[in-house]
Image (cartoon, rainbow, N blue to C red; front, side, top):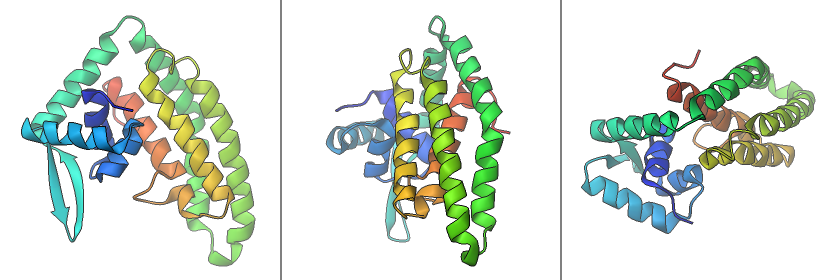
Length: 196
């Protein structure tokens, strides 16, 4: 499955510094077409591949950031999109404090308490997944690229349930916390706001 120019640029933007595989995951596309798209964007000066301490990743150039912002604004200008994103962002911000509390409690739990905290954490992540899926139900048919968030949050919750602790709040992976934070950024940046 291929991705649009905007989906690839936006995936790089949200990832900050991402491998080709991570960009493809965020764009919900297959790796080969995404790599071709990244190479084409690199030739146009919109992305660059940076090798840092033996780990390479894609990042946006200033030209790429401007192009991503322009394409995002174009998406938001389509009829009916802005109020729908505004409504989704409002609903998201109502449940966001619960996610912040879950992640904070998990991160602050002493190793000896992790078993008990894990059960509570996963129960709350399951509840948040259901609410997130419901929240996105009106937005996804209009902006299909948003479908990734509930899917990836649910997948991360499933991995956490299987004992993969990094799926809860791990960095450098599509953990529940990473997916949640990227959705928050995506919603508010479209509205011209910053995350609180």
